[in-house]
Length: 324
Image (tube, rainbow, N blue to C red; front, side, top):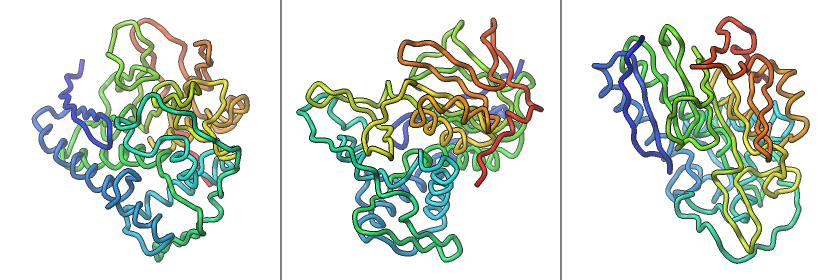
């Protein structure tokens, strides 16, 4: 059995975990990860007034750095491949719903909010030229990269940590958004499936083994708050501008990258009853949990067995990628 080295820390308003198989290289892996997290936070945080994204939203456009251009490009791609179910122009809607600061600073209860059903401006209103890195947005558009930026950061951190380590395998988890890089352990990376990324690792919980790509869970049960007795959460339905009213309380997806997994898991919450067929058509292994706790497994997602269940490494499903 492969022995892992594990390091935990805090970043991007949550927790991180990095796991390496080259135990002696853990300090290099952590240094590379933390540098990457610092860079993505400075570029794409909507909770920092001095972030590049905040400045871009304030002036409604301009030439952005290569890193922010990458993050915006991924967000717009996510909107395109999901038919707008995952849309980065939900910024104003998220803020008006009460999620206007780092989640740790959002009060769990408060006075009622006057929320109005109104479609968000839409990703098509954003003009973006990847070559020049020029972004232009009309008045009223506020970008929020929450559905993609943290997952993209996990992918970038895993790649940076592997480069620093030089060999073996790396797993990076940013608040439950998981990216894998390098050579996996012989039995795959064991990953416990949970709606809450802070849940304690326990024997007997549903666990899968994944060899490559990424895993992401989107949930309405963790980042939620009350306003005037109404329960609100952070996943916005772009069609209404309100927290999504979904039959699924969580969706976990495995894909060829963490950012693709997170695009799909967020889309599944928003798409609701259409999610199973949408995921099946794209060959994406997924685990959906409804409001009553009933589990529906999609595609090659394994049924729970003693120990952990392997997702077939050579299947088309585990190599699935959202493409435009």
